Image 1 (cartoon, rainbow, N blue to C red):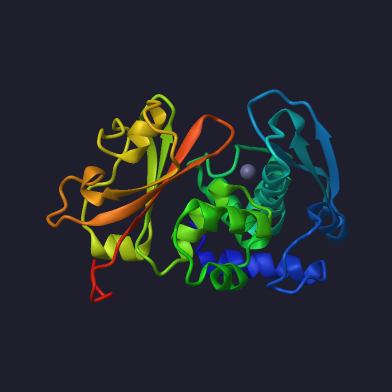
Image 2: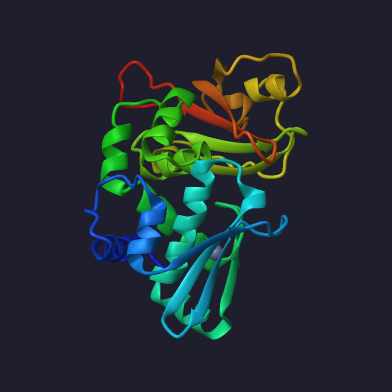
Length: 270
Ligand SMILES: [Zn+2]
Protein backbone atom coordinates (compact mmCIF):
# COMPACT_ATOMS: atom_id res chain seq x y z
CA UNK A 1 0.00 0.00 0.00
CA UNK A 2 1.33 3.45 -0.90
CA UNK A 3 1.85 5.51 2.26
CA UNK A 4 -0.39 8.51 2.91
CA UNK A 5 2.46 11.05 2.69
CA UNK A 6 3.24 9.84 -0.80
CA UNK A 7 -0.40 10.04 -1.85
CA UNK A 8 -0.51 13.62 -0.51
CA UNK A 9 2.59 14.32 -2.61
CA UNK A 10 0.78 13.14 -5.75
CA UNK A 11 -2.27 15.22 -4.78
CA UNK A 12 -0.06 18.30 -4.47
CA UNK A 13 1.61 17.59 -7.81
CA UNK A 14 -1.83 17.63 -9.43
CA UNK A 15 -2.74 20.80 -7.54
CA UNK A 16 0.47 22.42 -8.82
CA UNK A 17 -0.34 21.35 -12.38
CA UNK A 18 -3.81 22.95 -12.26
CA UNK A 19 -2.72 26.06 -10.29
CA UNK A 20 -4.51 25.33 -7.04
CA UNK A 21 -2.81 25.91 -3.72
CA UNK A 22 -2.45 22.95 -1.39
CA UNK A 23 -5.18 23.88 1.07
CA UNK A 24 -7.94 25.50 -0.92
CA UNK A 25 -11.28 23.87 -1.54
CA UNK A 26 -12.14 22.64 -5.01
CA UNK A 27 -15.28 24.36 -6.26
CA UNK A 28 -15.38 22.93 -9.75
CA UNK A 29 -13.95 19.44 -10.15
CA UNK A 30 -14.61 19.45 -13.92
CA UNK A 31 -12.32 22.45 -14.23
CA UNK A 32 -9.55 20.38 -12.61
CA UNK A 33 -10.05 17.66 -15.25
CA UNK A 34 -9.96 20.25 -18.02
CA UNK A 35 -6.87 22.03 -16.71
CA UNK A 36 -5.11 18.69 -16.25
CA UNK A 37 -5.73 18.03 -19.95
CA UNK A 38 -8.12 15.09 -19.62
CA UNK A 39 -11.43 14.50 -21.33
CA UNK A 40 -14.67 13.92 -19.43
CA UNK A 41 -17.86 12.11 -20.31
CA UNK A 42 -20.97 10.75 -18.60
CA UNK A 43 -23.15 7.87 -19.63
CA UNK A 44 -25.52 5.20 -18.30
CA UNK A 45 -23.45 2.12 -17.49
CA UNK A 46 -25.73 0.07 -15.27
CA UNK A 47 -24.87 -0.81 -11.73
CA UNK A 48 -21.42 -2.44 -11.76
CA UNK A 49 -19.17 0.56 -11.31
CA UNK A 50 -19.29 4.30 -10.58
CA UNK A 51 -16.49 5.76 -12.66
CA UNK A 52 -13.82 4.84 -15.12
CA UNK A 53 -10.42 5.90 -16.39
CA UNK A 54 -9.49 5.31 -19.97
CA UNK A 55 -6.27 5.62 -21.94
CA UNK A 56 -7.37 6.92 -25.34
CA UNK A 57 -3.93 7.01 -26.94
CA UNK A 58 -0.38 7.44 -25.60
CA UNK A 59 -0.52 10.25 -23.02
CA UNK A 60 -4.23 10.99 -23.59
CA UNK A 61 -6.79 10.05 -20.99
CA UNK A 62 -10.50 10.35 -20.30
CA UNK A 63 -12.53 10.12 -17.12
CA UNK A 64 -16.04 8.72 -17.24
CA UNK A 65 -18.87 8.93 -14.72
CA UNK A 66 -21.75 6.48 -14.52
CA UNK A 67 -25.00 8.47 -14.46
CA UNK A 68 -26.77 5.43 -13.01
CA UNK A 69 -24.74 6.10 -9.84
CA UNK A 70 -25.63 9.77 -9.57
CA UNK A 71 -26.50 9.52 -5.88
CA UNK A 72 -25.49 13.12 -5.23
CA UNK A 73 -23.21 15.81 -6.63
CA UNK A 74 -20.89 15.16 -3.67
CA UNK A 75 -20.64 11.52 -4.70
CA UNK A 76 -19.96 12.47 -8.34
CA UNK A 77 -17.13 14.78 -7.23
CA UNK A 78 -15.59 12.01 -5.18
CA UNK A 79 -15.84 9.53 -8.05
CA UNK A 80 -14.06 11.94 -10.38
CA UNK A 81 -11.40 12.71 -7.76
CA UNK A 82 -10.85 8.95 -7.42
CA UNK A 83 -10.27 8.68 -11.19
CA UNK A 84 -7.91 11.65 -11.03
CA UNK A 85 -6.01 9.53 -8.51
CA UNK A 86 -5.58 6.72 -11.03
CA UNK A 87 -4.23 9.25 -13.54
CA UNK A 88 -1.94 10.96 -10.99
CA UNK A 89 -0.42 8.01 -9.10
CA UNK A 90 2.41 6.80 -11.36
CA UNK A 91 1.89 3.08 -10.59
CA UNK A 92 -1.80 3.33 -11.45
CA UNK A 93 -1.18 5.29 -14.61
CA UNK A 94 1.42 2.77 -15.82
CA UNK A 95 -1.10 -0.01 -15.30
CA UNK A 96 -3.74 1.93 -17.18
CA UNK A 97 -1.34 2.44 -20.08
CA UNK A 98 -1.15 -1.33 -20.35
CA UNK A 99 -4.80 -2.22 -19.81
CA UNK A 100 -6.42 0.91 -21.41
CA UNK A 101 -9.44 0.80 -19.11
CA UNK A 102 -10.11 0.80 -15.36
CA UNK A 103 -13.53 0.65 -13.74
CA UNK A 104 -14.00 1.89 -10.18
CA UNK A 105 -16.28 0.82 -7.35
CA UNK A 106 -18.24 3.41 -5.31
CA UNK A 107 -16.27 5.36 -2.69
CA UNK A 108 -14.61 3.28 0.06
CA UNK A 109 -16.46 0.15 -1.04
CA UNK A 110 -13.55 -1.89 -2.41
CA UNK A 111 -10.79 -3.87 -0.74
CA UNK A 112 -8.51 -3.73 -3.80
CA UNK A 113 -5.22 -1.99 -3.16
CA UNK A 114 -5.45 0.44 -6.05
CA UNK A 115 -9.06 1.29 -5.21
CA UNK A 116 -8.15 2.07 -1.60
CA UNK A 117 -5.22 4.20 -2.78
CA UNK A 118 -7.38 6.12 -5.26
CA UNK A 119 -10.03 6.67 -2.54
CA UNK A 120 -7.30 8.12 -0.31
CA UNK A 121 -6.15 10.33 -3.14
CA UNK A 122 -9.73 11.54 -3.63
CA UNK A 123 -10.30 12.46 -0.01
CA UNK A 124 -6.94 14.26 0.31
CA UNK A 125 -7.65 16.13 -2.94
CA UNK A 126 -11.14 17.26 -1.94
CA UNK A 127 -10.47 17.76 1.78
CA UNK A 128 -6.79 18.66 2.27
CA UNK A 129 -5.37 17.37 5.55
CA UNK A 130 -4.44 20.80 6.94
CA UNK A 131 -7.72 22.58 6.22
CA UNK A 132 -9.81 19.57 7.26
CA UNK A 133 -7.93 19.26 10.57
CA UNK A 134 -8.42 22.98 11.25
CA UNK A 135 -12.15 22.67 10.57
CA UNK A 136 -12.70 19.71 12.90
CA UNK A 137 -10.76 21.23 15.81
CA UNK A 138 -12.82 21.40 19.04
CA UNK A 139 -15.80 19.79 17.35
CA UNK A 140 -17.40 16.61 18.60
CA UNK A 141 -17.89 13.53 16.49
CA UNK A 142 -21.58 13.92 15.73
CA UNK A 143 -23.94 14.42 12.81
CA UNK A 144 -23.84 18.20 13.13
CA UNK A 145 -20.05 18.30 12.70
CA UNK A 146 -20.11 15.74 9.89
CA UNK A 147 -22.83 17.58 7.97
CA UNK A 148 -20.87 20.79 8.35
CA UNK A 149 -17.65 19.18 7.03
CA UNK A 150 -19.56 17.44 4.26
CA UNK A 151 -21.09 20.74 3.09
CA UNK A 152 -17.91 22.77 3.43
CA UNK A 153 -15.72 20.37 1.46
CA UNK A 154 -18.57 19.06 -0.75
CA UNK A 155 -17.86 15.44 0.10
CA UNK A 156 -20.34 12.77 1.17
CA UNK A 157 -21.13 12.40 4.85
CA UNK A 158 -19.56 8.94 4.65
CA UNK A 159 -16.28 10.36 3.31
CA UNK A 160 -16.40 13.11 5.96
CA UNK A 161 -16.85 10.50 8.74
CA UNK A 162 -13.92 8.38 7.58
CA UNK A 163 -11.66 11.41 7.15
CA UNK A 164 -12.66 12.69 10.60
CA UNK A 165 -11.88 9.33 12.23
CA UNK A 166 -8.46 9.23 10.56
CA UNK A 167 -7.45 12.80 11.43
CA UNK A 168 -9.01 13.55 14.82
CA UNK A 169 -7.17 13.43 18.13
CA UNK A 170 -10.39 12.48 19.95
CA UNK A 171 -11.35 8.90 20.81
CA UNK A 172 -14.25 7.87 18.61
CA UNK A 173 -15.51 5.04 16.48
CA UNK A 174 -17.66 4.69 13.40
CA UNK A 175 -19.88 1.69 12.78
CA UNK A 176 -21.46 1.07 9.41
CA UNK A 177 -24.68 -0.97 9.55
CA UNK A 178 -27.26 -2.10 7.10
CA UNK A 179 -30.96 -1.70 7.73
CA UNK A 180 -31.39 -5.43 8.28
CA UNK A 181 -29.55 -4.98 11.56
CA UNK A 182 -26.08 -6.23 10.67
CA UNK A 183 -22.78 -4.48 11.29
CA UNK A 184 -20.84 -4.27 8.04
CA UNK A 185 -17.69 -2.47 9.05
CA UNK A 186 -16.13 -0.53 11.89
CA UNK A 187 -13.39 2.09 12.03
CA UNK A 188 -11.71 3.58 15.13
CA UNK A 189 -9.64 6.69 15.72
CA UNK A 190 -6.06 6.35 16.95
CA UNK A 191 -7.04 7.54 20.44
CA UNK A 192 -9.88 5.03 20.60
CA UNK A 193 -7.51 2.19 19.70
CA UNK A 194 -5.08 3.38 22.39
CA UNK A 195 -7.76 3.88 25.04
CA UNK A 196 -10.02 0.86 24.63
CA UNK A 197 -9.04 -2.65 23.85
CA UNK A 198 -11.86 -4.59 22.23
CA UNK A 199 -12.29 -7.00 19.37
CA UNK A 200 -13.53 -5.33 16.20
CA UNK A 201 -17.25 -5.57 15.48
CA UNK A 202 -17.79 -7.20 12.14
CA UNK A 203 -20.71 -9.03 10.55
CA UNK A 204 -22.41 -9.28 13.94
CA UNK A 205 -25.97 -8.29 14.70
CA UNK A 206 -26.38 -4.77 16.07
CA UNK A 207 -26.59 -5.36 19.86
CA UNK A 208 -29.89 -4.63 21.59
CA UNK A 209 -29.47 -1.86 24.12
CA UNK A 210 -27.79 0.37 21.58
CA UNK A 211 -29.52 3.36 20.12
CA UNK A 212 -28.90 2.10 16.57
CA UNK A 213 -30.77 -1.12 17.40
CA UNK A 214 -33.81 0.93 18.43
CA UNK A 215 -33.45 3.09 15.31
CA UNK A 216 -33.27 0.32 12.70
CA UNK A 217 -36.09 -1.55 14.43
CA UNK A 218 -38.37 1.47 14.41
CA UNK A 219 -38.44 1.78 18.21
CA UNK A 220 -36.96 5.28 18.17
CA UNK A 221 -36.50 7.90 15.48
CA UNK A 222 -34.13 10.08 17.52
CA UNK A 223 -30.76 10.64 15.93
CA UNK A 224 -28.74 11.15 19.10
CA UNK A 225 -28.64 9.55 22.54
CA UNK A 226 -26.45 9.10 25.59
CA UNK A 227 -25.51 5.44 25.90
CA UNK A 228 -23.16 3.12 27.70
CA UNK A 229 -20.18 2.33 25.52
CA UNK A 230 -20.36 -1.17 26.93
CA UNK A 231 -23.55 -1.90 25.06
CA UNK A 232 -21.52 -1.82 21.85
CA UNK A 233 -18.31 -3.14 23.39
CA UNK A 234 -19.33 -5.59 26.17
CA UNK A 235 -15.78 -6.74 26.97
CA UNK A 236 -14.66 -3.33 28.23
CA UNK A 237 -13.73 -3.52 31.92
CA UNK A 238 -15.08 -0.13 33.05
CA UNK A 239 -18.48 1.39 32.55
CA UNK A 240 -18.12 4.32 30.19
CA UNK A 241 -20.79 6.68 28.96
CA UNK A 242 -20.79 7.89 25.38
CA UNK A 243 -22.84 9.79 22.84
CA UNK A 244 -24.23 7.78 19.98
CA UNK A 245 -25.29 9.62 16.82
CA UNK A 246 -27.00 8.23 13.77
CA UNK A 247 -26.50 9.36 10.20
CA UNK A 248 -28.39 7.93 7.26
CA UNK A 249 -26.32 7.76 4.11
CA UNK A 250 -29.32 8.27 1.84
CA UNK A 251 -28.29 5.50 -0.55
CA UNK A 252 -27.37 1.83 -0.30
CA UNK A 253 -29.45 1.58 2.88
CA UNK A 254 -26.50 2.27 5.13
CA UNK A 255 -26.91 3.60 8.63
CA UNK A 256 -23.80 5.12 10.19
CA UNK A 257 -23.30 5.09 13.95
CA UNK A 258 -20.97 7.73 15.36
CA UNK A 259 -19.74 7.03 18.86
CA UNK A 260 -17.81 9.35 21.11
CA UNK A 261 -17.01 8.21 24.67
CA UNK A 262 -17.30 10.87 27.38
CA UNK A 263 -14.15 11.85 29.19
CA UNK A 264 -14.03 11.45 32.95
CA UNK A 265 -13.94 14.55 35.16
CA UNK A 266 -10.13 14.84 35.14
CA UNK A 267 -10.45 15.39 31.36
CA UNK A 268 -7.49 13.16 30.61
CA UNK A 269 -8.83 9.65 30.96
CA UNK A 270 -11.86 7.87 29.68
ZN1 LIG B 1 -10.66 2.94 -9.24
